[in-house]
Length: 304
Image 1: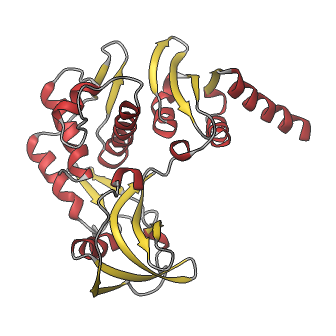
Image 2: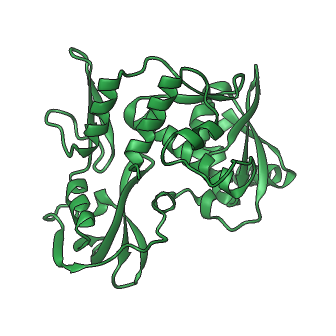
């Protein structure tokens, strides 16, 4: 099975080699990691799961690898924005997933995935948190690890490493609680020696563990409010960042912007994130969400 990094870069390579807009249905057939059982039917839970996975991968391609694969409403498919990389460069990028540090590059925010470009040689550099290599080794040998986190000592069984919003996370079974927890790598033992790996205390990863779901920290994915289907008008220059932040799909566009449709399962989170776009995104329906946003703005105005 392809790793998440290989899946994402294989997606970009597939779009490049096709040279034409590719549909979500074609991606599920031709790109390892997106397979579905039988034909993909729009609007079904399976379709929504694959669509969300693709949206996360498109954000990773753009933010972490500098490759933009975007939806073209006119062509009803996903196309690569030029320039792209040749086959040798793609291979080098896949191998770059194992890099744990790069000398001479500003470390930036601890724990973040980063890149830099050397103007003289146009080299792409990938930076990975220093604990990734240690935790990958523990996962491969199924070894329990111990580290400091939020002022307490945690003993966990690491199941997978992944990213969300440009941050590294560890998905692990907390031995004290016997439940899946997620730990941000930049918060593990800050200022202390590296984590301890116990190769004598091994474990098994549950067969039903879903690595993609483990790193889906979007509150709209796990919210429990009754599902509402929202239509949001987004100004053209903000469509990409809006879809990355909120999910959804572009269903139409004109000179004023694009209409993005999405299912909302956590109303307050939707309101907060929508308002973070200022006047560049406006919910048009349903009335319940329009009123949710309007009443909040009225309350803010009355409090001044």
